[in-house]
Image (tube, rainbow, N blue to C red; front, side):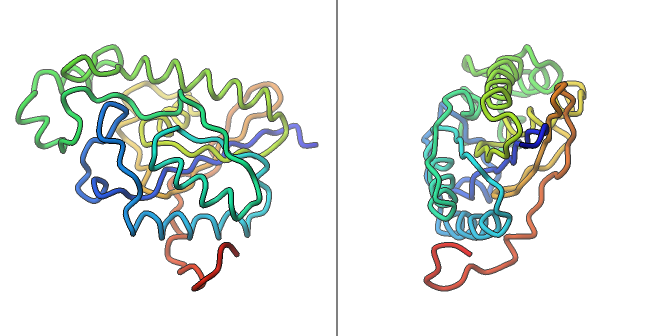
Length: 218
């Protein structure tokens, strides 16, 4: 067994809210995948089947992540375990809005949120500090339970950016300085001493490959 644990980070496929970049957190409508998102999930499943080293699949319990995770797990012959703390942040009154709309309606609250991980979105949303605390706990549990293995983590922009930021030991505001596109793959490795290395960020090359008609996986 390797002494390196790898978390492969997969953002869910598109929903109808994704192309418009509308905030869709754990306090919103919990949409499922759009037709485009289902195609992205299958393309990702094909790519991960070709990769061949995924040993476990964990997911946010939100619908779009569960649908993405199950598409992959079916190809890999694996079960899926839901981790509640991999859910997206609760964006409070900002749910369903674009950043431009939030800036227009809640300019002071948005500035505070962007400037401090302790500031919540309007309407009693969740702070980034709260998101970081729960996501770090999930990470620690996965690294301990799956030491030396490769685990697929299916989640959302906020939690995945947070895992990458923590691996880089970067300051909190850097979560707003990285792209994690729909159905993108990133990867972080953890040595036995806990040292983290970001190996891949926002890889979407697999989405250019059309899944074979009628195929369940590669």
